Amino acid sequence: DAKTTQPTSMDCAEGRAANLPCNHSTISGNEYVYWYRQIHSQGPQYIIHGLKNNETNEMASLIITEDRKSSTLILPHATLRDTAVYYCIVRVADTGNQFYFGTGTSLTVIP
Amino acid sequence: SAVISQKPSRDICQRGTSLTIQCQVDSQVTMMFWYRQQPGQSLTLIATANQGSEATYESGFVIDKFPISRPNLTFSTLTVSNMSPEDSSIYLCSVGGQTNYGYTFGSGTRLTVV
Figure (cartoon, each protein chain N blue to C red):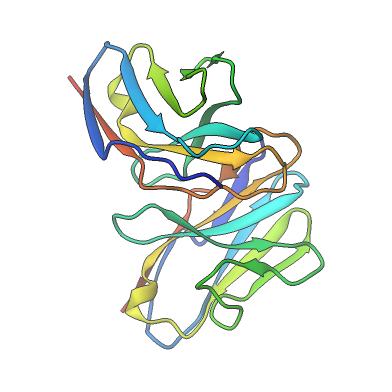
């Protein structure tokens, strides 16, 4: 699976949009981009995934560049409960494949 | 999505002993995985638990140290054998596989070896 690069940490003011970038310049055509988050002392939680089109669900939006070499996770109105480590993972589109976690971005939402 | 019950939630163990962690899912799942998360670190995949056959281990992990069972499609165990303080970590079970959506994780077992 392709390697991803994320900033180590970010801050965001409560109520503002949090934009978390991820670089995956070696992504291949059959790899999806997945985002998970891990709130302290809990297991990781699936947020969203996409192949090449932008995606939106009740939690977040995922913007993937046209060349698919980078993506941005957007939390439109960050709350204190969104403080967590966010992981960007690229994975071959096969239901049997594992998820390999990188170091992630530690997002702190500031009151 | 599946609901996972992982037991125990935490334990403190003596070095040299073994601990078996259980992962129970409320529905049949195709894939089950075990992860380790060392203090302050990201998650590392230990192995894929295969139903009815031996687990598939990642590089750096061996069956003698981390034996895994998966007798059916809703249950798996991970044993941490002959523990040392370096095994102090959170161990997590993950399940999924019916769709291409993200997998579900248990809340983890926080293990401290003294």
